[in-house]
Image 1 (cartoon, rainbow, N blue to C red):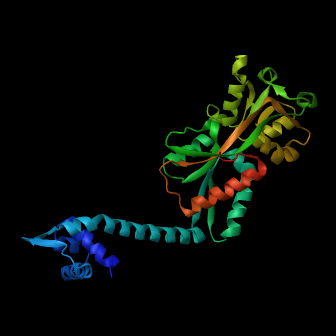
Image 2 (image 1 turned 45 degrees about the horizontal axis):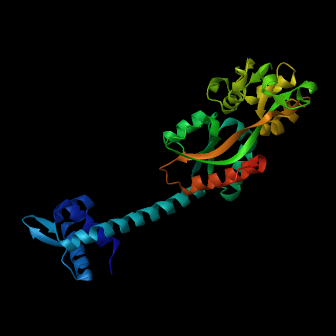
Image 3 (image 1 turned 30 degrees about the vertical axis):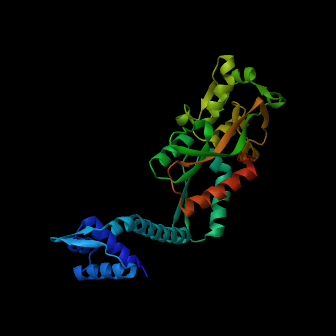
Length: 308
């Protein structure tokens, strides 16, 4: 019967070409390594090494055994890591990337979903803007995230769209939201826009620039602010209008701008929200859990995008 201990000693001896050096690498006594090799040879009824001077040379049988031994030990390592991941999932920290606007109306629910399953974990939702969240993914500081596709570079990333969040025009003037807002009307509007630090990469502005491309104009902002709450409050005061995701309307207008209304754009425009992770990533149980829960939560709020 083969054992993990035997295969470990076999591989160390194979790689080192010496029982003594194999013992030093493993931190064992040399007789112990020799005993494990003899037991393995007896179990398989073969000779694995020939003594040459102070070292050993693998036989053809050893060459054949080596890749199988490596796969067995690798599988055992993967199993141990999986168990450790599950254990840490119950008591460790779960980190997930989510850009600011989506976190505004899905974040609290997502955290509640996680804690309902794993009351002992610590949860971190990371990120303000999709561009910053993607950079955290590239650097390996996050395993997975939900971000807006318009602001995402696909290079080296696996992108799975899961929902569409309609962009709508909001105003305290009822006449301005009495009908859908065309590109021509939008190009003449006086706007307050959030995400000023990320204005070049903000997904909402990217979509609006594409919409206004045929008019030859970019969205003109009268007021620039950082957070969407301030933008909505200024709309409620009648100081400017804005374009925000529909989820923001449902979350913030009743509280910060109860006198404001909204209208769709014509043609309708959307932020596409996607789960993103590095293309080469082997996702941990914690990451897979967050992807499952974040997808379900955002699809309850926004229009789901079903996989093709």
